[in-house]
Image 1: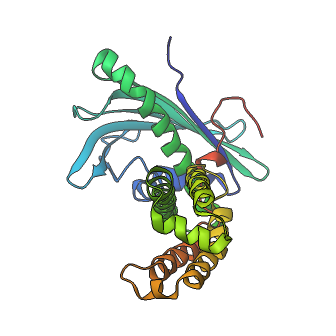
Image 2: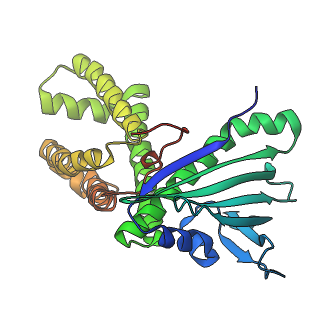
Length: 304
């Protein structure tokens, strides 16, 4: 079965000429497009020639993918729509993409423009490459959609892409940390080991018998694991951060109330919860109005 090309569409409340400039100027383009680290135009021999360029994408420190491309812009005077066709590829074997083609289109309307792209590519390594592309293509589509929303916010609100990506990835790292923390605290000391300290603290706080408290610790662990998995859901981040801002002081006070000496122990819950509380506040602030791939239309002809 032939795979579908990647399609991304977004409405932008900005002049079409501004959108054209921010996407066709390589120094501006490389700032908002997550797929490229740098883009360098090659001087054209004549105005009619397609614009050739080279690009680099840093995959990780010390590892980058370099490639080539060429684009050609046309202007449909009937309705003001602009189209830029693209041909790209790379000879580097570490890239699953061998060569591809696509286009950008800028469709003006009363409130600004609709900016969309559609592109497809050939993969390397035959059936193995096609198998890897099951994961790679959605990642490319996600990166394209996120980049389009970053561009939209840059044009509409003036927030530069670096600031947007910094907030986005810092928030993501904090979410991963909270997911790991809640999952570990629920699974290891409560579900798997049912640590005596966990049991005694719950028994002291609730007045339950030790055997009942042991069972209750297990279910508390299940709840913590469930809460950890909530951090993997793409929406509702600020709600989770807000809940933790309220939760961590309550957990700290109840723990110290049960055993005041615990506050003087090394690696104690007071300092641990205080650090997580501050991170929850930071996450709550950073996560306001983040760029999102879900702001884009991902199927041709689909409207919201």
